Length: 413
Length: 105
Image (cartoon, rainbow over all chains, first blue to last red; front, side, top):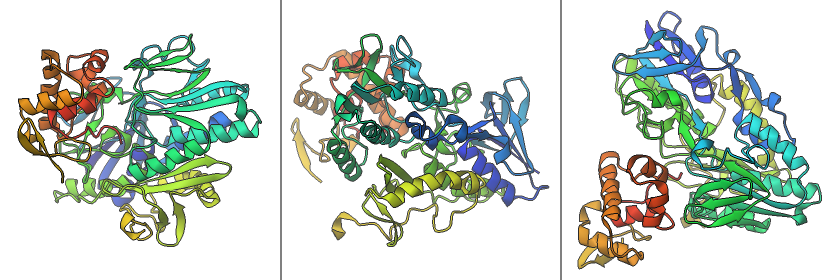
């Protein structure tokens, strides 16, 4: 009987466990999922909390309840992984031996790595919406914010969901207009990138959308210090951005238990992983999925979802002694909420940047274009997440490989 | 693909001026690239970072980001910005003759 251990009961760990449980008979594989707590957060929902559009308790469910029968679920911390002995050492010293290990430990925020970020003003005039507590605190602060400078700042890439900070800007613009105070507020977006987004066509579209809304874009701003008392962001090259309210997306690291595992993680604690097979380059029996993997693609739930299919196939092939399938193409797909009940959709992979057109085929949701239909898609996605994506069911018409049918290439226009 | 003559040597570069073939690089090219970016002279500290970038690229296939550079090179982030103003990872990669770090996705 195969022993399969999955570290992490978030998006990647849950959908991998459920897919593997269906793939193997009960007498063929023993599957164990380990997580340090039992709170599974629907992370895309955090964006809506500061604007009162959802409540933190509405986006959290028990982790164990998302797992199929026949999956062991342990709520305990992980001390480290001993890849040489093929075992996981738990916080209480107990060990779990594995034939295949799936690392799905996600990423963690590291606000303490930026000077002053967690100092005076933190959770008073300096917030992040990337945690339920931060998002709830920000809701209270925004509720009474009716004049001054609101600055949204990404400290460093990579971050989870690179479009979320832009969505926050668009929603803040909408929210402040709805409250009739937009004219009294200056909005600015400060990013370490050289444009609004990483990929050229989307960066141009999104940059234009910031300009249309009167949101100042500050590029190549590498935050060295946050002065909460004086209300200033200070870059390493000594530029300053004043703020009355700052929304900061801190630097991200891999989970601490990866850092404690000899040879498993890179400098930031992410697992070096083959970008097509999802097998780690550390040890053949170790695989990585989602944010935990060090791959040249966005850290996002859609990426994790599309990786899942190839990952589950490869865990089975590895355990059967067969060659791995190298078909993961870096497919990512993100709804970008733009305010006023509209949203945009982008779809891309390792090689193809987000392009205009329709998804998933010539008839479908508009790409790189604001529409009400995409907003409804984004809202509906929460249901799809709990009921289809986590259980590991295929979503009709949506496949792991990126579709090309509905996309307009530069040569076509 | 554009070809640029740097310090008397023709090299392949991309549209942003990064060398596309790191094996065409040498010390004279680094000095000339640095001068074009306003870094003159290249101090021992600059060389330390540039050589570290090349070693990382050879080992991993991509240059490190600023935060990784600050954690692993022995040169603190603040000093990296003094040595290579604006974008240390990008600028040091350019001078080191390796592709732009892909850290930002």
